[in-house]
Figure 1 (cartoon, each protein chain N blue to C red):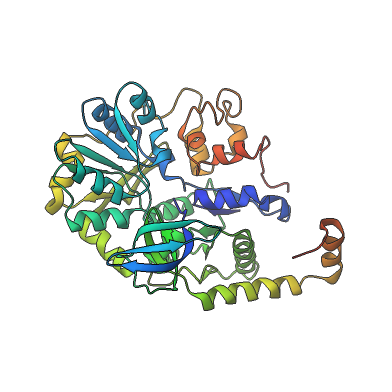
Figure 2 (cartoon, chains in turn yellow, orange; figure 1 turned 90 degrees about the horizontal axis):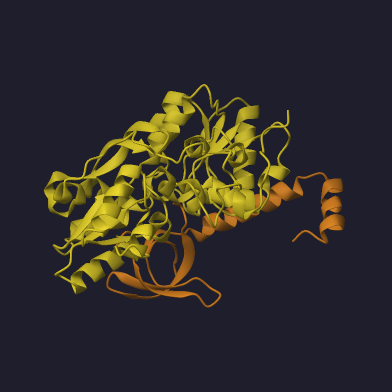
Length: 338
Length: 89
């Protein structure tokens, strides 16, 4: 069983029907690769609360529609909260500079692909009225945790392409040395994914697990060192709670003390409360996120929970497995037929 | 969050570039502080920032590998695809 950890890979795989091309004994599962899906409900709740309390919340489109334990930012906006969708963290800097009297908060969600620009802006010195609610997650430890799960029994990983563009393949060396699971760093074109699967199968057939690179035009061993240095200067790595999944050591980011004035958690006294009610009753979002089940195995999928009426983050986000499957009208599980 | 798109750097002004993604899509104000890039280079752009300069030689290598894989397939299978799909591009 092969697993990927990137919503964009799930999109390519589902959209191009790649599972239908695979031999009967090869299964590709969708691991925890959707950042909106794994953002803790507590952080969403904090952003919602602040938006209804006179602060201007800025975030990316997908994030605004995910519900915490109650409302989403989109709901809050309808209720009069000040919520703005932006494309780039640079927009946050620009908007805050233009309105110095208002308090702005950038809800910073994503993986290591998305963290460096925010780190860069923090290092540059944003306007005083802008703070960051940093809820970024770091993927390699999650791959490590998943690799160690006897229940999931993953044989090989299709590694995230653009996250690895930033971190370099080297970021996975500790995980590889500990778990000896086959790994191929893959691009996002359907041909890329097919080649990567072939490379993984060859590793498995020869019983020679390796760290191989299919996405050589975009991924190198060292990665983007400038981006890594920016992240390292602005953030420290701490344990991170992945919504509905687990608290994984070393997989969260926190703004460093010297930049505390830009940390929304410090400014507004926000508490991180993992484990509080994460999803609506009966929803199996957590198991979908982890890759334990396929969307059709959740009782709400395509019944109460649809793209136009989502009940959980996996149906909200364009990188959520449920949304991707639902958009492609997938109503049956795609497990091994052997 | 891996969505990043390749585009060609058309012009540069300080820390920002104009990037052409083809098909008429052009983005101004792409931040290039995280990469070292020149006009004519292809970059991967994620959320308004260039995160990598794409290596053309490597891209061509991957395409070459793909064609080699297809060529190594049994001849009957390729014919089957030609007949049912109306041609393999």
